[in-house]
Image (cartoon, rainbow, N blue to C red; front, top):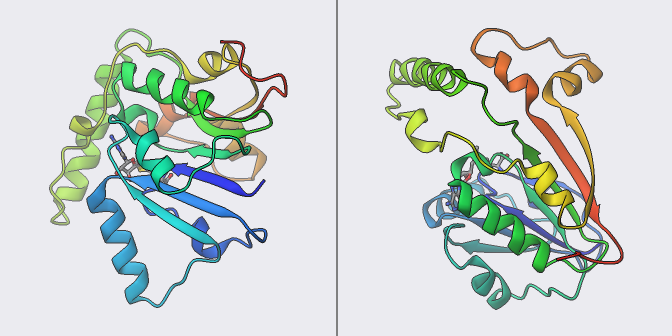
Length: 212
Ligand SMILES: C[S@@+](CC[C@H](N)C(=O)[O-])C[C@H]1O[C@@H](n2cnc3c(N)ncnc32)[C@H](O)[C@@H]1O
């Protein structure tokens, strides 16, 4: 596969450090200030992409497919999609729209990697907000004043894994808890415990294409 799209790329550095195949194109989408910060910082360090790297500064709640196509994206080619650490920052309807759009833009054989968070049990969101509050306080003590809970959207939403399956994706899932154990890493504790249920999801769009 020679076309990859990293949604909400943040400080992801795969385009700079992986040995990409000849002819590969990697698109990175994130908000303009994040794209500007990373591009400027890596250029200052003398880092150069190892691939045809195209950055797309856009808000993923807006019409990002138009901007992606303008940058050269070709929906007729299979695509490797990556959406890590993104969905909780989108309101529920924007998450659905994003997963629908990813499916619509995917030729059969395309691949996806993302996370699927089980819906909160009663009282769980309150605990999550308290945990984020404690994280914010720790950062504040170091001079970084950000209210982490205000960045996230809480409450019920469609879970990404079943949502994608219904749209023709064949997926594997692995919980954070199992992923840590499989790699010999210590188990989660304290405020991080609830992260154990988060599922890492990867898979392929059925060769027959999306049923919808
Ligand atoms: C937790 S970081 C994850 C970054 C990267 N994917 C990773 O796993 O290291 C979340 C990223 O989502 C981006 N993001 C959040 N909401 C967004 C939106 N509406 N449009 C574009 N990017 C967004 C943020 O700018 C940030 O870079």
